[in-house]
Image (cartoon, rainbow, N blue to C red):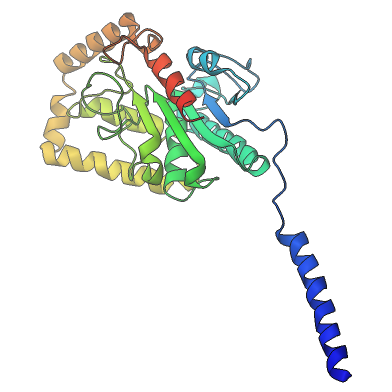
Length: 303
């Protein structure tokens, strides 16, 4: 009799446990109905936006207009987008705000929509920020897991590396700010970069140490202590390259009146060319596909 009661009690307890298990391990709550298949955080370039900008500014409009659909949601990242101290904030500070804001947007979407794929794209300073965000995610220090990030598009990235996956004709050198130490880690396979021939922001000759030094000072101008270690690594790399090339005499040779005049002419020619603003027509394949169209197609292919 006692055995029967014990069996009955065990059976009742098992039934309750099973019921509780069903409550706790049942089907996961479905994502909200408005969750997109792909979420794209788009970071505009310098002067294309501000903290209170219109939602669709600048170069990236040529990308986001092409991918607009019920399956893809794009949000633009607002940030100061400044470059010089007299604008109210230096480049490094502005870029850091863009990186943080974009990261917050990706994190919020990832938390709300578990099945939504994530992407980040950027142009110019926005590409700098997008690349930094992708690098942090790819090296395990980011706001979302690396496997959630399925596409990264960088147009005229000032920190382009010569080992990044370049779409289009080969270009010389690296970004004016020097390449990211450590690269993109686990997200490297999904990163695509675009740099037009002659665009000095993303294609500075490696042996132009004056330009590289100026670029380094610009991109590392954020006084936040959190970025000091990274800036120190970047500086060591640049100084190492200068030392290998001959040290101070080489740098001095690039600062003569003649060299400075030549550099001034090259920079003036670059600005007159308008190449930095022509990614909407800059062909990157044999079919004549523009950089912005190629990037749009790439994003759509991930859905």
